[in-house]
Amino acid sequence: MSIDNRFLRAYYIMFFWALRLVACLVAAVNSVILAFVLIDLADGGRDYGFAGLAFVAFSLCVAFAMWKIGSAGLLRLRQANAS
Image (cartoon, rainbow, N blue to C red):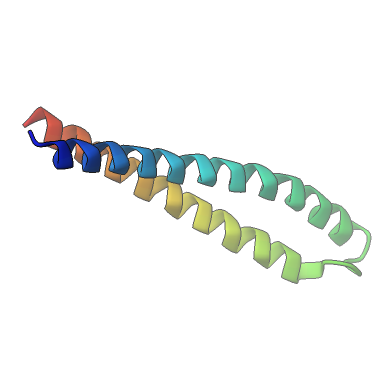
C-alpha cells in the first residue's frame, strides 16, 4: 500500500468521524432550541411559532442524514479493509 493510499484512507476516516460528530452536536443544539420553541408554542407562539418548529425538524433531518452518510462511509471503509 502506498503512502498516498494510507493518507487518503486516514483522511476519509477522519472526515466520516467528523461528519458524525457534527451531526451529534447539531442534534444536541436542536434539542435545546426545540425546548424553547415548544415553550413558545405553549404560550401562544409569538416569538418562534411554527416556523421555529419547522426549522428544528428540518435541521434534525439534516443531522440524521449527516449521521447516516458518516456511518455508511465508515462501513464501506471497513469492508474495503476486510477484503
